[in-house]
Amino acid sequence: MDCSFYRTNRAFVFTIVIVFSTLLFSCGKGESTPSNTITFWHFWSEPSQRAALQQMIAEFEKQNNCKVEVTELSWNDGKTKLLAAFNSKTAPDVMEFGSDWVAQFSSSGVLKEIPKDLAHLDNFIEWSTQPCMWKDKIYAMPWVVDTRVLYVNKALLEQAGINGMPATMNDVLIMSEKVQAESGNNGFGANGADPHKVYKKILPFFWSNGGDVFNTSGGCVINSPENIAALELYVQLSRAGLIDTQKQLDAAFAQGKLAFWNSGGWLADKIGRENPLLDYTVIPLPAIAGEHGTSFAGGEYLSINAATEKQELATKLLQYLTNGKTALGFCKQITEAGFPADKVAFKDTYFASHPIRSIFSKQLQNAKMTPVHAKWLDVEVVIENAVVDALYGNKTPEQALNDAAYLISKLKPAM
Image (cartoon, rainbow, N blue to C red; front, top):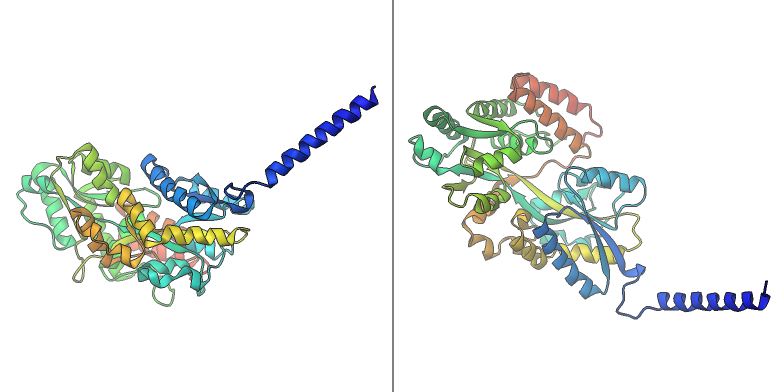
């Protein structure tokens, strides 16, 4: 072997390595390096949603001379992927949660506490801040909130000889029965077996009738007389209509085959695309007991990984996305986003100027979120199974809720 050739080439390779390393680690001020790159997992995966979010992310990157690596999740398996990521210590720096997921993660110690002077929770709608807290500490910030209202097919009511809108859910029952009897069309849409969606339909019935899942002491009261009566009404309504999944009931209403259906803002968009001539309106949920109905309120929340090494930049991303101006711009582009959780942006005149969205805004004045409970996702399954058992006649509403109360009482911790 020619040793001089070997030494010469080795020196050449070594020089190349040094030069490359110098270039790599002496990037100019304007270039992104690992120290100013963070990861963000979110659930806005539809093309229009992705574009709107990316627009906001690009502005944040420009303002902070950084890079945000985004990963899209789906609601079907997103929670499973997040749990797996935390277990394998590969979770992102920042992640999005649904309002009823936050407690499960904050109670398990995997989220970074957010100091009060950085979270500024006073800037947000009061009821939207409840999921942020666990044992008097802040682990999330509210981003956007939304609710559901009652969609009404005016043409089907007219065909059945019905004038006016229902004032109570009992009116909805009477009208649904008449629509079914007079025209053979479906009156009321009831969610059947449909994971993570059924509870959003039955809780408003509980709340609107003076019931709840837990009392103020954390005890389970799901089998209260108020809740039993509410579930009985829901079952009655289902007999005068159609039991199906949310997706199928959205489609049925958009096609003009359903008189009453409790759904979100996405349905208005669907109708606009697929059946713009549909004669329909939206109204706040009618009352059961009391002056008004109480709807389900949901929201999207942002949290920081407790193991992140980018806490400062991660906190800036949370503050930027939840800022009223940023969130308002997002909600203007994406109807499904709902409304900014920021108090000032929530009251923006933009929403009042849109007839349908103004009804959603009005409904949010009478809406509730699910209880903050570390085992809520388990509670949710019990509630949904009870509703399905009652809907399909496997159990009476009373039996179904008594059994649910027993199962929920076995879940620990209670609150």
